[in-house]
Image (cartoon, rainbow, N blue to C red; front, side, top):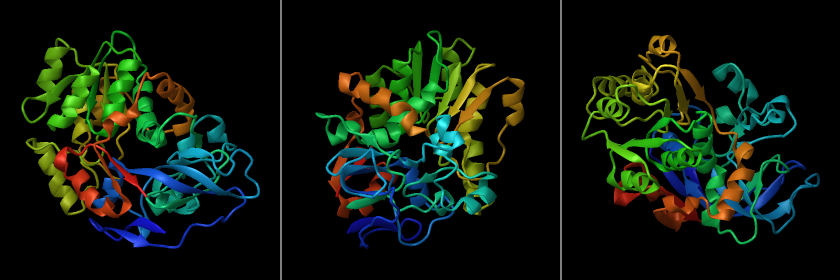
Length: 389
């Protein structure tokens, strides 16, 4: 089959690789009908996440049709359409029973390695590093899905791939980012980053009843999408984020702040961003936490910081004393995808939200390597890329 494979920093290739096969009675094989490039994939593309090996198959936003099932699979049949969540979960361990699917205790097949890196293992993830299991990803013609009885979302009749594909990651990620803010009708919610996750976060915060949502970015096409959803927008290259947020909130700061950026913050004119880039370049710091610092500074005392943006390692000069003295609550985590997908699927069916709005580019799998660069560099108005194997 054809698949997009990682061969090093900025080196994604469309290779011919062996087709996946049933390896465990709980597996299924799907024929991929749609997949996408995620912002988290760019952290691998740019070489900021440890644990990748040459030839690893990329991708964790995937859907398709079941073409083969293992002997123990009871919840899926050949021919069914499914979206595959990026988190692989067993449904039986203590964490899964609590709905904490992204920290499933059984699915990371490199648990010993993850225990050393994180203190305790997280769940296995598709198409990510060997710290999370080294599972082949879904930017391919076919995908093996382990723990398939639980690791799937069935697609209702009448919904297109484009409407449901993002149930795999960015829609529930944006929803969880907003939900863990405990939004109240009097709240101002500020969202840093108007990429695909930020767009879903903005709409989720509005649906969850925020008084106002403020979207922060620098790219006109992304800010336009946010404004179309009803957000107030701030272009951080044109004005001070801190000053503008204080102006909007009459000096009190937003009650809820959401980091939809993660480790590759692109602030251009601040001393801390220049410091981060210099330290990252010589491997003295892994991540660029400009957004975290800014949120801690501007958030209203007793507020909540929600962090769906991915961080990979060791951060420098994070003002934790500021967060402690202001009484801020910090909530983070990979998304517990299936905790949210029943509700979100109903909202898609009812027309309350159509995640396909974020798609700007649809191409074949062979064009994937070039689209990684287009997406990373925000060329051609690119916000979200869908691949059709």
